[in-house]
Image 1: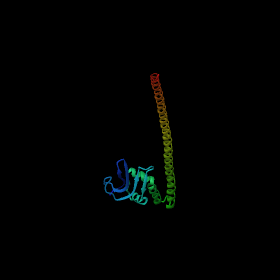
Image 2 (image 1 turned 45 degrees about the horizontal axis):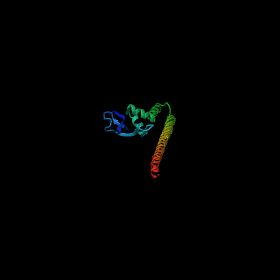
Image 3 (image 1 turned 120 degrees about the vertical axis):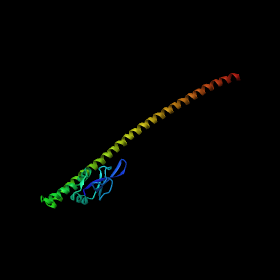
Image 4 (image 1 turned 90 degrees about the horizontal axis):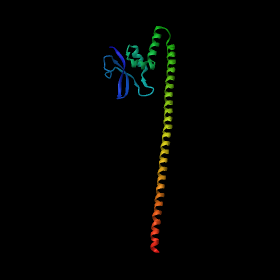
Length: 185
């Protein structure tokens, strides 16, 4: 039986989530599987991988062939490197302790790079949020100035209308007073 290490899709439309499984090569993508060894969530930044390292190493050791994406995931987690180092130990190129030191050095460098990526992503999001806040403040200030100008224009036109109405009332009051004056005389 030919076994494959492959991804099994879950999640809803436009939001995939994958289980990393060991399956018969003849089984359909989301069908029957032998063992689940982890999960992969590409929706986070950086992508989240939860992998049972020992079981993945075991299955690679017994001949399970990973798909292209599964191989990339296993390489990123160091399973393929450890398999390679174990081959060197079997051939007598170096001992188990040297292999473990090489793997630990590689893993420390990889973790440092991932930490930098996560920190730069967080910093970029903070800067983008700060820039958006400043832009929103400018827009709000421009709106407030426009509203203040509009209110001032309304107040001015209202004052002019009241002044015109008062002047008109005075003009209409003077002729009425003149009309009454001759009647008294």
